[in-house]
Length: 343
Image (cartoon, helix red, strand yellow):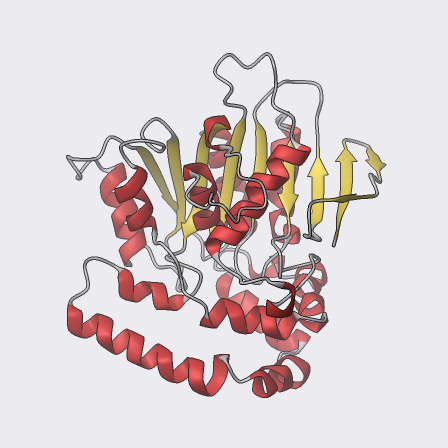
């Protein structure tokens, strides 16, 4: 599959055409300000989203002199949506592999960087977990698209409302839950998988007949706590049109049905004293998020790290809690993106 790229500079637009990234067809939106040599920033969206959601973040970063890259993950947005017949199994490691390969192929390492760290990864929801996984190098194995890791280039990670896994089954892996609760969550999720998520005809009918632009608009407005008026036609179309693409049903089904993968708890336990030890991690969390609530396991885990309540952790974790929902950088966009730039 081709990788489609668009390169944007301030006041100009340059079409870079198509390049090949093994068998991945991604849509890439890059805005670059050459005036200053600041770290490259790579934005990784959440479930069902695309580069469109980062519009305010891109504008703020470019204004402040940062080279910005934003990609649509495989199976999402304007990127290709291959399936099992093309040997694609959607997972957090797969997407981390995409991020790793994209960086190596499209963001040359700067020679003038003394420590070689010239990349900041920014994610939202499951995109945060993708960024964290890419930074640890946990995705690298013999089947990786490009086995060379980018972890030695990561200067920092900023996560907006970090998710627990590929899907909600990951909630059952939160360490604070007792056995009975985990069993009930898994049992309920098994029922949903059997009757809904793995039911391709039902999902096809839903995407074609139930998921309308009006329904998407109403759903998104419920997630935009501070500025529901930000849910405009551009944003709605960025969710609606990809759902009509070939392969969208299988991509959606896989995302809901596949193994949720390692949680942030797992990654910190495994890499907290090594790869992540000297990497600043900043959380920006909307206090009214109903999808990944601050009161949930992941939110409280990072809040405790940021507050210094975990005596065994040496991670450089900080957190900013502000008004907003699940997509604070496009909802409460001024405060959220100013916070990112300040960090």
